[in-house]
Length: 127
Image (tube, rainbow, N blue to C red):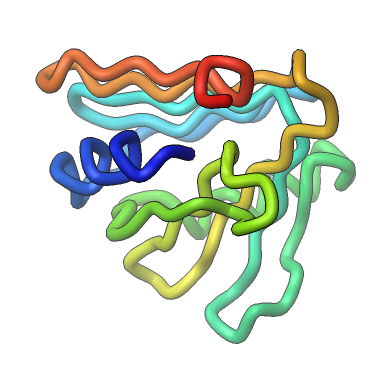
């Protein structure tokens, strides 16, 4: 993500996660005035950096583990990789980290923040 995109998103933080849904392969996070829809690969790390689950996990496991994100907040966002900084890494209030990976240029994630009129569709719109 470009530095400008990151700054604009950081200005909106914290964002409370009130909505969670998973319908393979789509992961949706959201709350009042914002949403993040992920169709690309992703992984969830715990507060110690251990892999909890990812987009290739069994659907039942994903649904069960995602419950731990309910009522948390996105407290920081950064580029997931310095090598190819087009995907976001979300730091959550419980210490967990959600990382998004675009395997292909056509993989998408869509982040909308309505009160700021921000819409980012990655990774192509950020390259």
